[in-house]
Length: 402
Image (cartoon, rainbow, N blue to C red; front, side, top):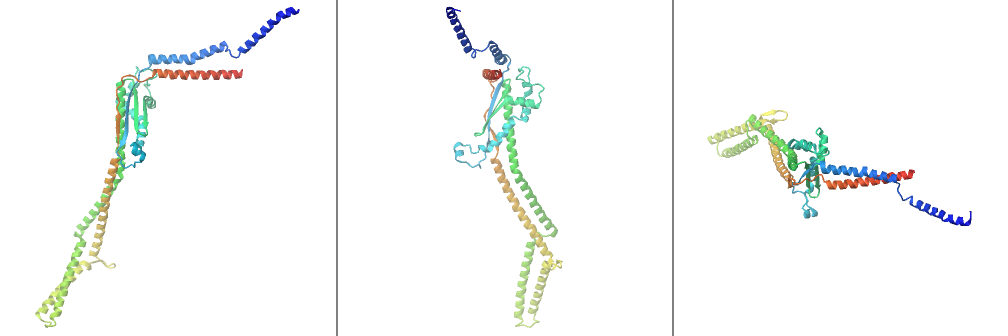
């Protein structure tokens, strides 16, 4: 080949090299057509088709749901709680005393007991399982209690602020009037529960005090009955008073006997022993001595136990004193129990709870659910994000395997 021919073919080879380099440079950045078609179809199936179905459902089939809202708080009249600096400034010093009751109410709002009570009054199953409701929002007609409770949890939402103790709940139904009726029923049943809790707390607080009063009252009655039976059997109202009267009488007789004996001794110094005056005083002295002996015999000579030497009067006095001591103790214990009962009643009154409603349910003017636009936007973002992440992971794994 001549030099001229070589010169003519040289540019052609350089041109081929240039085109080859350009093709090689473009190859890594260009997406093959099969891959583009795969991405397009996956986007249509994973994003566009679900969005079209969602838009169609919300536009043509979704049943409007109306909401009724109510708010309340549990309040008490407990004034015994200490108020710190923050509590004095905020006025929330006693809010902690009702926190446990608030959590009980929150649990009750999602309980089977409430659902069954509301269903009995407002026919929840009949409204939620109505054929006019779309299939995705409808309750299954043959749903059991557990499924019904799960469905109810999707139709009620609750909010609780621990700082202020405010509880708010929102119920949903497929008609505005029925939603308001459900909220009214839930609010009334909740108020009944709070009243029952308060009554039970009051009953528990007074239970011990009432039992103590009944016990001490029975003890006092038994002591009084024992004294009454003693008086009936012994024919004596107060043996101690009777014994004191006998002792006083004996002392009076002994005093008179001493006086008579003194007069006899004085007269015998001037008169004969057989003088009428002396004889009269002597007979008087003998009569007084006989009375004294008789009185003493009545008090202490009627011995019941010769070994112990205990007289009937002594034993009678001892038994009566025991009964009196028991009566005195029983009376004091009964008075103390009454004071404790009154204090417990005041404490129970201060700890009562009541439902303070600040937001009553109203009839909705427009449907609040479903939130079409928001749900579609959220679904679009979720589908696009899932599709993009899935596509990246799929082709990244495939490129590494190739």
